[in-house]
Image 1 (tube, one colour):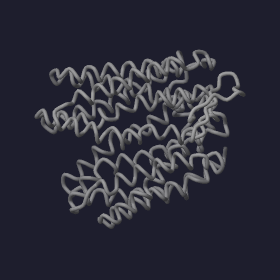
Image 2 (cartoon, rainbow, N blue to C red):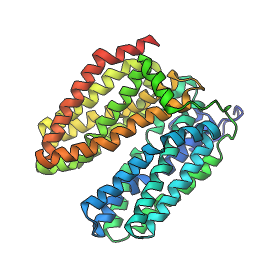
Image 3 (cartoon, rainbow, N blue to C red):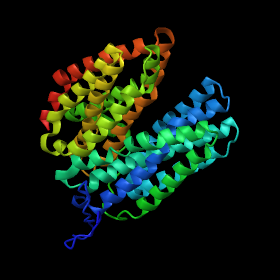
Length: 402
């Protein structure tokens, strides 16, 4: 029997005998994990809605506008997210975020004029910005200290599994003229996420005074250890946002398939997060340079080689590094914060990541207009490697101060 209740349940804990050791984790973490997996079904709408618009005959500028408004609204609501989570807590933040996200999907499914499409994408940006920060914040609060890295390793599977399983099927359905599957899948996932979020502990943590993001930024930036974590989050985002969206474009220029990088990358990231997340709890900040170096090496091998074989090898290395870096960074942020600063610090850390996701793809696309995607991604790989070396020499040693 794959699932069984333990006879020695502690109050408020789920003791499941599962292949992945979920019996070690508190009940709230298991529910939060389920809500994250459900909400991430929307990744299919995130990445395939531009295809829907293209098949409907929209111009590239309109498609780009519908994409970028999501990121701008997400960033523009960060102050409100910080206030909401401070006043009402992460549980209600996950519930409301799921509902707003579901409403945005419903608006997009109605096939209305372009201004309404922008409204739907804006709603998705606001909902996702609230849900994502609330979920990571709740996970950081409920995870025992010795399981923070392993817990975030499991949580990091949420965006990867839909990428491998849902997106190919949803893309095929869209190309067959049935986008309703895409919307139904995402709406159902958001609804389930809202239900699971509602089942979280309602008053697990005492609410703290509001810490504005501006003040949190000033205090964090003046502390070199926290500044190192914020810069590390930006580097982590750039290693994906400045590189991943256009791998297929560069591969096309070189006459190979982008999937020869993307599939090994996703599979190795899954393996890394699933089986090696526990290393974070054991080695902590010592993994920063090795994991980021693995990312840099993977990008350089794949882009400088420009062949199927180097894409496969580079994808494997990039995925291993990205898989380790996700739980490592969130574990370090969780350990560096206290209950007074945690909400603002997690919101600020997410903002540093999302800023790169908003502007790095735009910058890369603009440069590619003149230089080509292959040249731009080769330059990105060199830039990533250079920043990793600089961080290892000049920034990450600051973490020893805490």
